[in-house]
Length: 79
Image 1: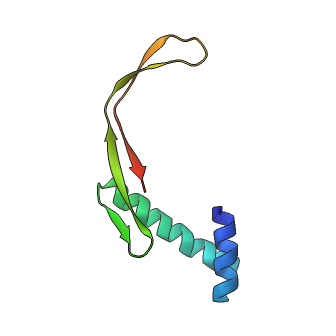
Image 2: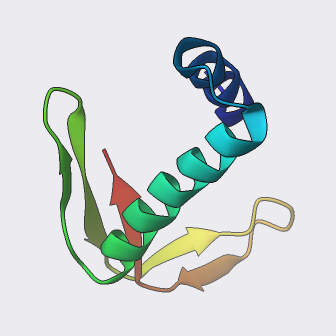
């Protein structure tokens, strides 16, 4: 399900306009993103939880040239 499909479905079920529903969905996603950016865990009971995982730097390869490159460490969200 895409974000647009989610907005359509919630709009139909709640008798809200698509614009109102889009604002609500965007606000929810923004809050989840902000919490994860701060390093918090987001738990939606009965659905699942979102957390941040840390990936160490590693050696990788450029797919076009095949040359070795250093992939920097990073934080990635996971569900």
